[in-house]
Each structure stands twice: as C-alpha cells, then as structure tokens.
Amino acid sequence: KQEVTQIPAALSVPEGENLVLNCSFTDSAIYNLQWFRQDPGKGLTSLLLIQSSQREQTSGRLNASLDKSSGRSTLYIAASQPGDSATYLCAVRLPPNTGNQFYFGTGTSLTVIP
Amino acid sequence: SQTIHQWPATLVQPVGSPLSLECTVEGTSNPNLYWYRQAAGRGLQLLFYSVGIGQISSEVPQNLSASRPQDRQFILSSKKLLLSDSGFYLCAWQASYNSPLHFGNGTRLTVT
Image 1 (cartoon, rainbow over the protein chains, first blue to last red):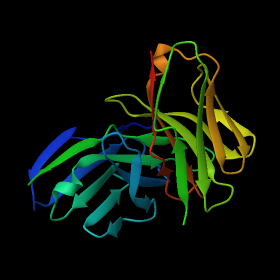
Image 2 (cartoon, chains in turn purple, orange; image 1 turned 60 degrees about the vertical axis):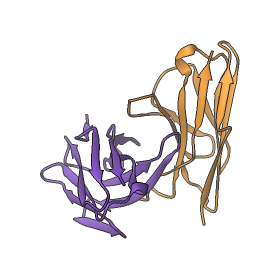
Image 3 (tube, chains in turn purple, brown; image 1 turned 45 degrees about the horizontal axis):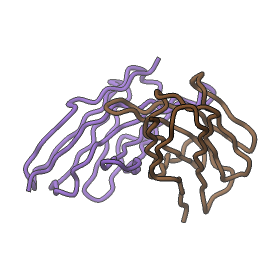
Image 4 (cartoon, rainbow over the protein chains, first blue to last red; image 1 turned 90 degrees about the vertical axis):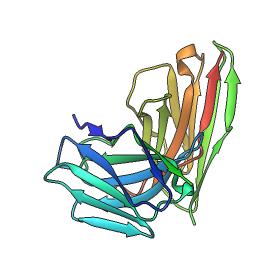
C-alpha cells in the first residue's frame, strides 16, 4: 500500500526566506504527484501537478520536483510571503487499473512571519 | 472556466437525522467526481468516487451513500447520522485520470 509522508509537520520562517517542503512516498510506481495548499476551514487549492515522466513543474514562485526512484518530491517556495501561510499537502496517484485512490500526506503547516 | 460548487458551507445536525450534501461542477462534461472526509489533524479519507452517471464506487463501508443523478452533480447522503460522521466533507473533480484534482470549499458537518 502506498504511504505518503510529509516532514516536518510544521514550519515557521521569516518573510523573504526561500524554503523547501518535502513529500516522500513508498511505492515509486506512481502515475503523477500533485501539490495543494489548504487555508484554514477551506478546501484544497491545486498548485502543481507533475506527471511521472516529468522532473519538475514551475508556477510563479513555486517549483515542484519529482524523483521517482528515490520516492521523493519537493516544493520550493521562493521569497516567501505572509500570504503563503497555509498547510501544504502532496498527493500521489498510482497508474490506471490500480484503483482510483489519491494517496495524501498529512501536510506541512507553514507560517511565514512578517 | 470550470468551477465547483459545494453547499452548505456549515451544517449542524442531531444524531439520527438525515443528511444531504450537494456538489455541482460547471464548465466540463463527464468529470470524475469524489467525496472526501477530512478529520481534524488527519489526512483525507476517500469516501466515494464516480466516473459517470449512476456509477458509484465506495471506498469505506459506513452509513453514508452517494449518488450521481446528473453528469455534473454528486450528492452525499445519510439516512441516520452518527456522532462519528462529524467532520469536514470535501467534493472534488477532475477532467480525466491524468488531470489535476480540484476541490470545492467543503462542508463542516457537526453532529450533536
């Protein structure tokens, strides 16, 4: 069974700092991996989707990388801002015909201090 | 553009009462639809998913059920709520298997 881990569970950084969030998964035979942010009391907002054939995806100040062989993905946030404060979750998808599950991590709660 | 609507935002219901949560998607056709539950401090639990009208798959045996009466409508129901049904319920959709998953704003259900 696929297990997804996000360490640390919480992270606090000063504004302007670059930071990296980690996501690890146990089964490297993934189909894709998606990063989300969740603000308190809200749904999840999609940030980036990386297909298994890709190594990275970029959107604005965000860059997500994927290393399937080592079972890891990182989300890099450049020049962090207080508005980046949220919980960040990753989710992996296995290939078709293996079920319709997205396997979610429990998230990293990020606080950016002004 | 595609949007997802989920309502109500909050709901307080007594034990033993029925439940109906609705989710609709606009701007796409034949989406994959999902119901998740998120308990405080825990990950997301997949409850139901649907790949087409009338096609519902259940991931967790419980007193909840789901229906998809129209292509872009997904309903989560219960005949009698339990205290353990309290939680944050999220509807999600995706255009195809390799497309991003998009979530609604969720419903906070409190069973008293």
